[in-house]
Image (tube, rainbow, N blue to C red; front, side, top):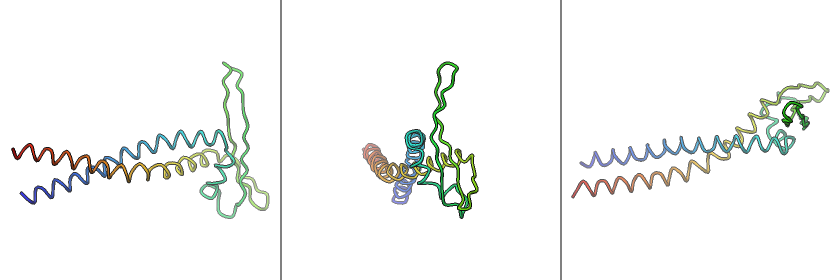
Amino acid sequence: MKTQTYLAKFGIQVLSILSMGLLGGLMAFLLAQVTGRLGIFLAPGFHFQIVERFFCPPGITSLSANHTQIIATSLSAAANTAVATCVSPDGLVMPGLEREATNAVINLYFALFFVPFFIPGSYLMWRLLNRLYHMLMEESDE
């Protein structure tokens, strides 16, 4: 009986960590997508400079982020684009790094959001599942 209790409690702990890993990861992913893309839309130079060391090749120290607004003529749709280019000290320009820069910003926000969701969420989920386990055990003893 004691071994079954320990195994059940261990299962509760594993289940709480896995469930909060999934839920915390999903919440962090959604928030990172929204916050990262909105941040790039509002201040691309600031965000690209934070993550330039992750997508510019080694030895290239300067990042140029131009923020241009393109207004499409069809259906009056407007698109806001940020152009990221890495510039080497000798003047070599590497254009077309918008996708890498955007992914780096979103990954940064994911890391920032995941930890606050995962650690307290795992503890709260563990407490909830532990309480449910004790309630079920008390009902089965009666």
